[in-house]
Every structure is written in C-alpha cells, then in structure tokens.
Length: 141
Image 1: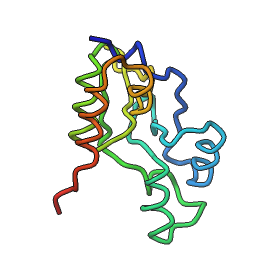
Image 2: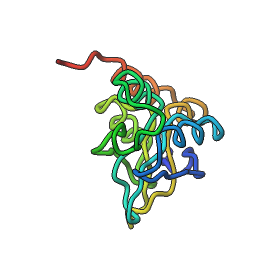
Image 3: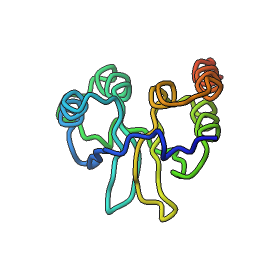
C-alpha cells in the first residue's frame, strides 16, 4: 500500500484569512491550482477553493475585495503524510472533497493530495474509484 507522501504535491501556498478574494483567485490562477489552505498564527484555519470563490463569493454578491475569511471553508479536513492512500480516499469520499491538506506528525502542513495526484500516481484504481463515488454522492439536505 502506497503512502500519501509518495504521491502528494509538496509545494503548498498558504494564504491569510485577511487577504482578498481577488488575491486568492490570482494566486490560484498563477499557480494553476484550485485550493489553498488558509493559515493564521502558524495554524490552518480553513481552506479556500475556486468553488468557494464562485459560490460564497460571486454568487452571494461579495466583491473581489471581500476577505478570504468571508468565503473560505472552515473545519478543514486533513490526513497524515504517512497514512495510506486508501485512508485519504476515504476522507475525500466521506467529506466530498477533491483536495486534502497533508500534515506531518507535528501537524505541520507538508503537502496537498489531490484526486488527480492519486489518479496519476497510484498503481491501483480502487482509491480513486472509491473517492470519486463518495464525492459524487448527492449531499442530504
């Protein structure tokens, strides 16, 4: 069983909750990624995704100067770098997320695991299939 650290992306940009949505969108565009952990006082306090910007930002009438804290997702989910890919896929499926922050045992951010990382770098298709099935389930209202 492969471990998360074998396939995760190590280059991670963190954004402040006081940054603007415009800055977050520009950094995502320039870095070609769709999610950024939000950090404050050396702690992850949430995450902002391209979907958060569209749904909580634009769709709710917040402008480009709105703060990241106003549109980010709180209650961030994460996994340890030495966990297996099956475990990460279970978290992604259970919480319907496509990108998962990865921490070391000191709970320091060390990477991001995306569904694409698993799909491209994993020898088995099972973790990807499990994650996609869980992510694609309709959310109970």
